[in-house]
Image (cartoon, rainbow, N blue to C red):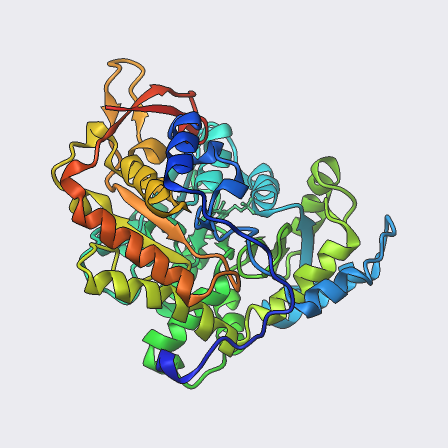
Length: 460
Ligand code: F0G
């Protein structure tokens, strides 16, 4: 990676959006009124919003101008063909089914392949993917390598799947595995990349056992960037070359264009060459999304996705984007904040059990740190720990804890400056200095599924 002080962002700013930092007293009142759940805050009350990198990108002048040539014809709009061409150029697939966002593509894919009582393996499924699998009374199975779950373990490709376990599964449960899903980068353990070798080997296994393989491509360009950085065999290859090779090792992909295609809404499902699958997908698309050439999106949105696919795979853009995430990460590492290392693609993941070692998990340390970041500087982060992934056992009423207690600082693309990142680091430094005074939280309301979106908390 280039030295950060030798270059600046490969863009200049044409339009700004005003943000304001509320006073400490206002923040204290607002977070209490939100029942200490940051999903209940109004965005205008947040100073630096690191809740997600999804749909929060700043579009380019090129994308905005594309909106003006949106062809809003019901059938056969010009922008659909532009998207089709972009998918062919960047991903190398022949068939594309536009959808309103990534989870809609997952819905179509699962409707096509999944039957009750099956198991869907993957390196690590995103939670909407898990939701689609569970809704069909089947089981998601995460087979990420053990190193991927140890935040302190240094490994260049912590998103890799355990190939031994995958083969064992494919060998022993013939007919019960409808597909394999490889998520690149692997969001759930810190935007960790998957190596080309691992993707190729996983694909070879699926060929051998005649199971289709799909890539969850939300952050595919960031994954390609890491392959270039961390695998010497690819250091001289372009991102687009790497992307074409990576996608050649799968039968299709789902895409949330809200990440690496740099748009605020949009997604698609794509197949390499299977026309029969494509026609089947279109049947479901028409029921849930819309006609095959728009799939739940306006023509203008299709155009922004098409243009975003090219921009998101530009090398200097990726260098700047990942460079900014790592700029923040390096600062935090120097301060001694325990993070998932090596640093991933779309955000910084703090290991909260190590950051607040004295707070029992029953006092929800991840959520407590989210609260402190808002109180300290108006920063909005998200807990990926007990609230998001734990649950209350219906039989015993006891809390079941997930393996990790992480806090994610997801960095939107092309939105904040390094000075905003400095503020985030300063806020965490201040919080680290008063760790022993931080109070935990208790959950006083929780929904049955996806409780973190609506839960209410009170300070202990
Ligand atoms: N796959 C991955 C790996 C994701 O991270 C997401 C969304 C989806 C699929 C679903 O896509 O939101 O367009 O329907 N991740 C967001 C996040 C919400 O904050 O990480 P979607």
